[in-house]
Length: 311
Image 1 (cartoon, rainbow, N blue to C red):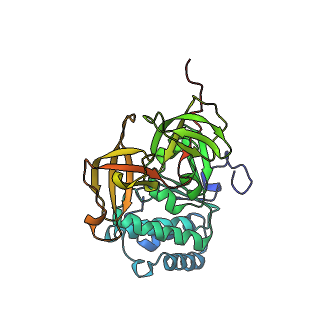
Image 2: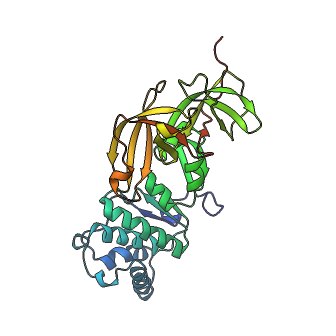
Image 3: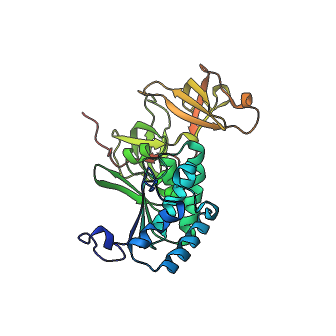
């Protein structure tokens, strides 16, 4: 459905769709201007109109000075701008982007993310972006649709889908996530109280958005690494769960820690932002730490419903 009309059985050339491919697919024997004007020529637009619209589109993508160059004379980012201009110059009803940044290196990809986003907002055209890159999806979109095997699992704004994943697939696909199988103590006014694996007597924690469940059941919880807090075990209250730093990597702006805890099959991942000297925020491997997280950071996942424990 495009603008309320079923276009399924219309020939592709009648649908007024703009398409940008992963590998640019520019015509190597044509100049930049000829590539951009190609769709207008096929639509039999008058020469004067074709030239004017081509010039305007090259101005929009900041390439007027390269109009007479050929694709092999351009950088990867510039070729991608030409591909965008060629798709937009025909004034399509919708723009389709098929992993358009997959052929670019990291620096060019980040640059093009902002440029495409700004261009899309300036022109105001509905754009459908298909990508397997989570950062690309979060940066480029107003609405995210997460699909698995042909099924739509969740639809929402980037912040909503990232912060409130409904299923394990969504939580793990859209960024790194700690998935923990917890035991349910029981329902209370604030939601459902849970315990971490290996914590038989502790007070546990409450998941505010939990569905009603019964004591003795289990629940699957997701916590993002940036929400986990690790601090010296010696300075934390006794009821705060303990864990051990089992791994550490330095990632420029952040430390990434692996946190091992009895009862967990896999170590948890925690991020710590670096705000001063690197050594001040590093924690040596083998250090015992207290493990906590920001209030409301734990999310109950729907694909692992609370079930009664076996008798």
